[in-house]
Image (cartoon, rainbow, N blue to C red; front, side):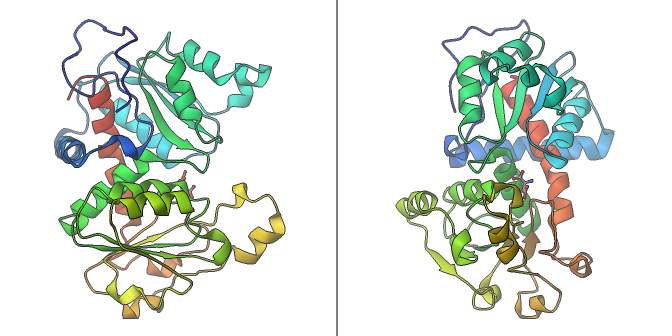
Length: 326
Ligand code: ASP
């Protein structure tokens, strides 16, 4: 992970010897297989603790700045819930138009301000690379909660944790990603992270103009994973263990007419699923628009609501880890 060792930040009482202490979480590229096993272990313990006692004081007195320049429901509220269930508190800044950002304050100055009051900063921003920029200026850990079309590392961690908790393992799986693979940052992070496991096969199903970016595919190819691109879901659904559906990212299109043409390229219904395995899962980072019909929600293979809950445990684990308490 990105090291901040050159920047002194040693509050009294933290376990400064833990390897993740004070580190940023900017990209899934930072995580080895062993790191993932460690995070999943901590997240699993968080799950047990929440189920048993709801909340506990591991991060008592710690403060999180939740800085969101783009809309969010799940990421921002799950980080808030994670911090509060661990006994810490949160400064939420989601209406940046009411903060000094509206006066023209730069991102580096905003994070340098917030770190005076808090212990960790969660940042969502429309520009790729913004989290890395913020981390360069902040002495406290910065967690990337989505940087434009770049990455969404905490989502990929919760996605892989979901697969592990639901299917029991992360090896020897066929994962099919469907929808907007060009602008969907979650699939960029997820396909990179899946290279840490063995026997994974990746299928990408998208309209031609929304194909997976070449640089992501090249990175995956370097790690030796088989990948194939398709226009139709039918040919790959029967072999799929994890179907990862994404929303067409309207806000990233320069031309609204182009969005209109592809927005309903795939609509996923219970009928489509007749050729799928009985033991497989359907995931979605949410929000969904029209790409999964609500009629499918009651199917036990629909894992997208459970996926959100796993996100709470993973974000609790990440906060505890970077604050030296895990
Ligand atoms: N919530 C996810 C994200 O922030 C997916 C989406 O918006 O479609 O990237």
